[in-house]
Amino acid sequence: MKRKNAYLVGIKGVAMTALAVYLKQQGYEVLGSDVEEVFPTDNILKEQGIKVKKGFDAQNINKDFDLVVVTGAHGGMTNIEAKRAREIGLLTLMHGEMVGRLMEGKTGISVAGCHGKTTTSSMTAFLLHQGGYNPSYLIGTPKINDLGPAGHYALGDIIVVEADEYLTCPKTCPKPRFLWQKPKIAVITNIEYDHPDAFGNISQVEEAFLAFAQKVKKNGTIVACVDNESIRNILPKIENEVITYGFSQRADFCIEKFSFTDYLSFMRIRYKNIEIGDFTLKVAGKHNLLNALAAGITVNLLGESWEKVRQNIRLYSGCKRRLEKIGRVAEIDFFDDYAHHPSEIKATLCAVRNWYPQKRIIVVFQPHTFSRTKVLINEFARSFEKADIVIIPDIYPSAREKYDSSITSVKLVMEINRYKKNAVYKKSKKEVISYLEKNILANDLIITMGAGNIYGWHRDLLESLRNKFHE
Image (cartoon, rainbow, N blue to C red):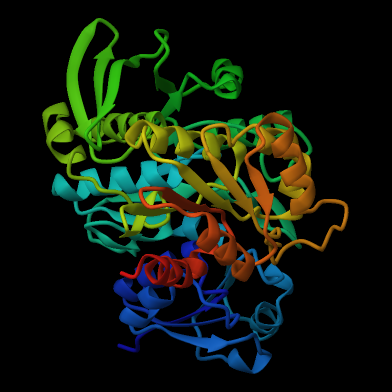
C-alpha cells in the first residue's frame, strides 16, 4: 500500500511541528517548508527525520501530496505554496481545521485559555500517559519533559489538544481556531484581552470562548476556572455540565491551602465538602497549581483516581519555554519563559520570587507584536514589579502584522519607569549582552521572556557569563 504524503507550509512553528510529528507517527511521509531563521523546533524535526525546505516556492508543491496543511503565519492561505496546492486540487487545510479533523471519532480533550493552555494540556497528556491511557496529543511547545516531542499519535481513544482562540487564517478566515474542535471535555483556564489584531475588546473574546464552550459534545463537560471574571460572565450561558475550580471558595474544586518551599509547590484540594488531599509539584507558581488542578479534574473525569493523580503530578517537570532552566553560571540561575502577555509576566515573576526570595531578578523581555504592545502598554508597564532590573530590546514583529512606528520599546521602558524605575532599553542582543556584562553579579537570576526569537540568544548570553566569571 502506498504511503501517504503530507506537506506542511510553515512547518517550524511549535503547533505545526507537533502536527508534523503526529502525522509521521500516524504513517505519513512528512515534508515541509519555512523561513531560514533558527527555531526551537529545528532539532525536533531533524531528530524525527522530517526534511524542511528553505523558503516558499510554488514548485515545491505537486500532485504527489495527499494533504497540505498551512500555518496562519507567512500569509496563511495566500502563501504561494498554499495557493498552488489549491490550484492543482490538493486537500489543503489550515492548521486549526486539520486539528479538528484529527479529533473526529476520538475522545477529545481541548484545553483553551489566554494563558496556561500549553502547561495544562501537557500536564493532562503526562498524567494520561503515566496512567496507561495511551493518549495522542497536539500541544504548542517543542518538547514536554519526560514525554518528548509535543505531537504524538497513539492507538488509544483519547486525544489532548491545545485550543487556540486566534484566527484560523489572518488573511482569509477570521474563525477562531478552536471552533473547529468538538471535544468531549473542554478546559478553560482563563479569558483575558489579547490578540488586539483579532478582537476589538474583551466582550468579543468572551463571545469566542462561549462559542467554543457550545462546541462541546452534548454529553460532555466544561472544566473552568471560576477565579476569572470573564469566565464567570459566560458560565450562565453554558448548557453543558460545568465543573469549576480555583482558589475561590465558590469553586467546586477549591485550592484551600498552598505554599512554596525548597523548590517545590504544595496545595490542598477540597471538592465541595470533601477533602481530596495534598499535592506536591516540581513546577513553580500559583498559576501552575491551577493548571495542575485542571489537569487532575480532567483525567479524573476519564477514570483516573485522585491517588494516581497525586502520585504522578509530582513527577511532572515542565515543558520547553515554560520557566525552563537554561543553565547556571557563578551561582547565577538562568531561565527562559514564553510569557508575552502582562498577566503571564506577573504570574511567572511571582513564581520566581517565591522560589528565589533572596536573588536579584533580572528580566530580558522581548515584546511580541506591535499591536499587543500598543494596546496593552499600561498593563505591561505594571507587570514587572517583582523584577529588580528589566531590559527591553526592540519589539519582535509577528510575520502576520505590519510595522507600526507609533509604538516602540523606548515608549514601553518609559511607561515601566513611571511605576518602578527598573527598566532600560537596549536595542539588540549585542547591547543586552554588553549591559549584562557590566551589571550582572554573582548569585543573580536572569530570565528571558517573550514569544519572539529571544530563545536564540541563550548560547551567546551563557558564553558571555562564563567569560565574565571565568568558568
